[in-house]
Length: 292
Image (cartoon, rainbow, N blue to C red; front, top):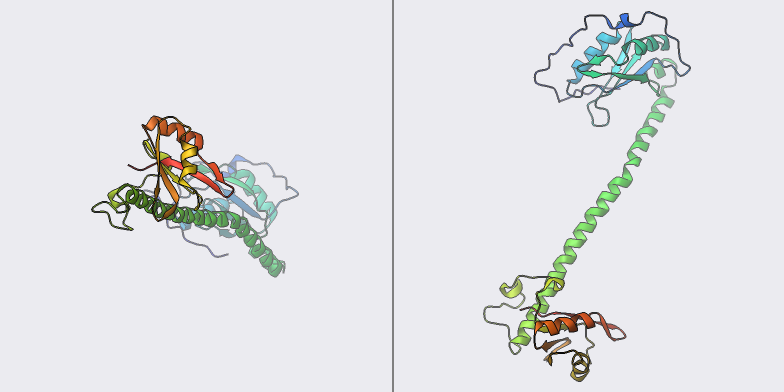
């Protein structure tokens, strides 16, 4: 495996590692027992990520080289492998002794965490003639790792699409609200827009507010009415509430109407009572305060 040079380095970091007063290997003099899962390759984590990659590898070789020949040191600067390295020895006995005596040794302010590597190194695979199989298995592991993150990527793309769709729906809703506003203005001014209002313009200088947040008004705005509904039917429906004054339809505009009460308290009571009223089998009436 090829090494990649890290681009991150602590500005005040010396290019050489401070050597301890006592050699690392002096801490344990007894013969180390070989574990059944022993490997000639060691996996090291909790390394200082701020150290330049070539400096880190040089320091690891100086430490582990005290126990035998280090065939290779593998470390990368990508996000997945930062703070980690593999040290490859000739045999398991050497690796076991090095792991036992170097475990938790503080390298650049961080104690090393060492364990046997679960995977065979390229060097040993080439030596025992299993490199092709070893290489194929490694590619499969990389593919599995990439596939594990696919659901997250898909979820992120779906979330982005949802946000784009929501923005588009909001834009369409604002356009619809603008049309309704102009219809209200035309109804209030005898079928004409007020002076200065431009058909299809952004609100005729009136900010768009969702229907649910409109301030109270003594006039109610009805939407989603059947096209053939009679004015008398609306009068019969709304006059049962106190303060009723009149129903006004909009000439040439079906499906909408206005209902006026003596004050906004009476209109609010009628609005609450008749919100989403099923005025026809396929028409649920929408009742909001008219825009002022």
